[in-house]
Image 1 (cartoon, rainbow, N blue to C red):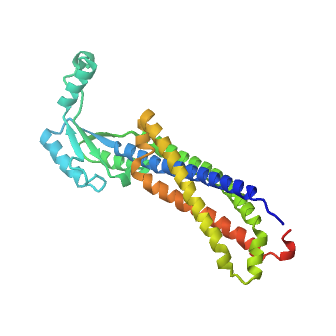
Image 2 (cartoon, rainbow, N blue to C red):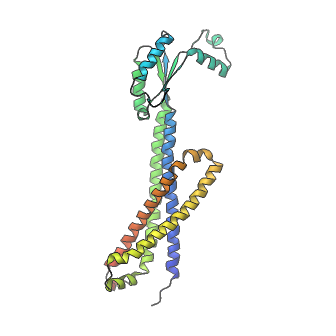
Image 3 (cartoon, rainbow, N blue to C red):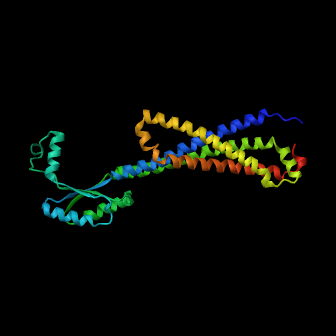
Length: 293
């Protein structure tokens, strides 16, 4: 019987195309998830505690309070100036320069502002529950008038980040499963066209590992070619983003994670294709020759 070569060739082309699509999808979603984590960390770095000091304390006492707060465990010790003192006179000058309104005429007070201590806290404490607990602790210290922080922003940031991460993961999982089943069907078609050859080799005494070897090597070649195509497309996509939307490219599609993302996508792609190939070959290795047609 004469077998047509056009069908396996067209199927191999479709297989490489599907693997390329899966590689691109994997890389983009992994990059977005990594970038989202970096973006969240950058936003968390901007979260600070604003401690307003009571007017009864002199500047010398405020400095003493600052040194006292510096010893607390939640203060970021990695920064040189983790606690910054801004005097109420400086705040008044900044207010006057920005608003151009004389607070004395508005409020009838000499200086209504208070000395401010801006505290950088460690990232491990930057959750809504922990920051709220820290704020309550600081409020109990003598000489502290009030403690504020962007509570609504912190709560919204964590909630939205978790929601977006779950949605992205679910969407990526659906797309990956759809593409995986498509790839699995293509691989089965390629191996199905060689089912007679596989059974003939088996009847001639070839071992299962010897029969699997050329298909696994072909699988590795297809993954490698698909990855190259995917890398070319992704580089064009990142180049477009870098020229047109540099803000997104800087925070989400970071070049720092590019090699990790491309390598991780290649590994996942190879595992998917490898597993599909093994399952498909084993099916025809175990089938009886009377059931080949």
